[in-house]
Structures are given as structure tokens and as C-alpha cells.
Amino acid sequence: MTKKAGFVAIIGKPNSGKSTLLNSMLGQDVSIVTPKPQTTRNKILGIYTKDDVQIIFADTPGILKPVYRLQDFMKHETESSFLETDIIIFVIDSSKYKSDEVKEITHKYSKEFREHKIFCLLNKIDLITKEDVLHIIDDVSKLYKFDEIIPVSAKKKFNLTELFSVIIKYLPENEFYFDDDIIATQPEKFFVSELIRKQVLKLYKEEVPFGVFIDIDEFKEREKGKDYIRASIILEKESQKKILIGTGGSMIKLLGERSRKEIEEFLGNQVFLELFVKVRKNWKNDEAFLRNNFNRSTIASN
Image (cartoon, rainbow, N blue to C red; front, side, top):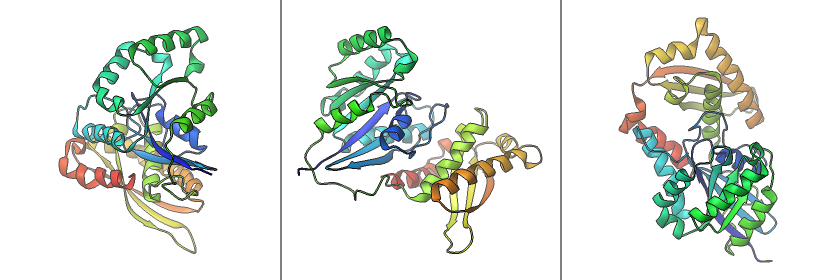
């Protein structure tokens, strides 16, 4: 039987549902999801393999205009996904549809779009009426000549079977790129750091989460007893440190408890987790810091 295999880049504005889509397509969480925009910082590869088909999905950071150096790195993560992909899925939040944003993105990446098969995915259609969906489909079809326009609800997993069918139709004939039991290419340390950051995003208000970088200083797997993980939570400001720790250490204790539970569920092992808080002023604009740390995360996701 002929095998089909290829790469699919998932792009779109922040909070359009890219990570939810990836998780739903794979049937398990490989990309963290929170209500906050810019949750995804790295390109994350998730691999779907079934029978004679392998699809390598790349979840990318949201398309935005960089304000600081970290966002430049995030922009590069998105644009680098075009180089190795067969299909680009442009995800739109139907509940916040703006034709001007579609025009802007299709114009900005017109060259890249012309070189690939392009799907327009109208996500979150469960939040709007059928009439609105039809109106958006009509409008989008006039703005750009997409190869496919597919309405879905990634959260409710509506119409994903149709999306799979369409992707497979466009995939090239290839041998598999990865063993069929691999779901993601990132190492466990990457996922552990992301699970801690996920809890930061959930527990704290806006000032803290976007100024956080999680560095896994030590990760020891033990045959007997709990695995040991030491992680540094790196912040931009001293004022953020007080907020993150909380009165009498209450907040960092809660952060540790919630992170540990998620990590244990992910690893399937009990974990002893130690968290340390450090301040690196304005690290999001620190070129040396970003190259040393963010690139290391980036490399882990390639």
C-alpha cells in the first residue's frame, strides 16, 4: 500500500485556536492552551500516524507585529515553518472575524502562500450562527483563492474528520518521516517547562505571565523513588517576584502543587519538584539571553 506523509503548518492570529486544533487532531495535549494570547512561543511538532498516513503538524506562535525581541524570535518560528511544509492551515477565529486581518496576512505572506497548498480554517463556528458562517465563507472566498475553506470547531471536534480527509487528499506520497509510535519530537524537559508555564498563565494576572521564562536546571529520573526536577522561574522585574511568590509563599506553593500534578500525569511517575525564582531584567529584549535559552527551546522543537 502506498504511504502518504507530509508537513502541515498551523498559522493564525493569537488565540485563534491553533493549539486546541493540534491537540484535538492528535487526540492528546502536546501544546499548552490557555485563554491568554501568545501562549505558544515555540514551534511545536505533533505527529499523527494511522495506517498508511503520517501528518506532521507544526503549531506556531500567533502572527503579530513584534514589539520586543522575544516576539521577533516567535515571528521567526512561524515563518520558518513555511520552509518545510506541504500545506499551510490559516486558522481564523470566526467569532472575531475581520476581513482586514485576512487581507493583511494573505498580502504579507503572499509569496509563501503561492508556493503551498493553503487551507482557510474557520474555527469556533459553534460560537456563531449558520448564517454568519456562510457569510464568512463567501467573504473569505473573495479575499483570497484558498485551496480549501473548512468550517470547524476545534474545541468541540466538529468537522475534524472532514479536515483529516482533505489534508490526506493533498499529502504527497512519501515514506514516513518518524516511527509510527512517536507523537511529538520535543524532549520531556521541554514539556515539563511548558506545563509549569501553563500554570503561571492560569494563576497570575497579565503583568506576570508574559514576563516569565521557565528553565529546567535539573531533571533526574530515578529507578526508585520520585523523579527530581529543579526549575527556575525567570522574571523581568523585582515587583513580579513578590507577586509570583505571594504572601508567605502561598502562591508559589500553589503553583508548585498544580505543576507537579500535571507533570506527574504527563510523565506517569511521581515527581519531587523544586521551584526557584530569579530576576533577569528585561530578558525579553536581551539578545544573549534569548539566543542561549529561547533558541535552546526552539532547537528542542525541531
